[in-house]
Length: 241
Image (cartoon, rainbow, N blue to C red):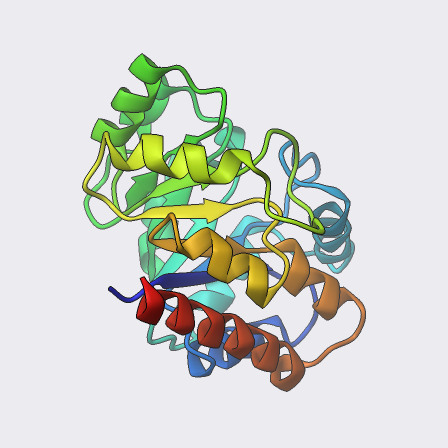
């Protein structure tokens, strides 16, 4: 079974940010998470907060980055991530579709407000954490579309020196309540960690480790090489499973 790889980028982080999308696709990404810049990203750690601040300082807005995406051909699905007070604005999901976005992640969206984002062509993927109760986990499994985002550790996003022990147990729990792919994220920072995560899940989401390289000045080719190393690790994980 092919393991899915979804790298993340903060939209608008630099003037050439859309060039990274092509680099990710060429490196073997199956999907790309595009974080819309936001002033108070509550689940994001220091790296992605720094990236969001950089994008906002350039004048990036959800509308401006979606307009850029609308003129940028990308051959893999794009998944937007943002917060509820943006996602629930009138016309937001229409703007996503116009930009070619096919999926959405809203980490602070209450389940009882999910109907407000129910539109054809945009699949909303829900998050599950290690402390999510079984009954709520089952509802997340039923109501997610596209995939379920399994948060490997309690806390915010960010690079970590090892995969959290809670990741494997959570992946097993989520896979019991859904037939959708289960993607592990939060803290996956190296090819080795990606392979370890993919051994228990259907794929991985890598954000802070990608953004740290971009913030430190790495161009699309260099960051693409890192994404390719993740792809190689996941391919090895699938081969030995």
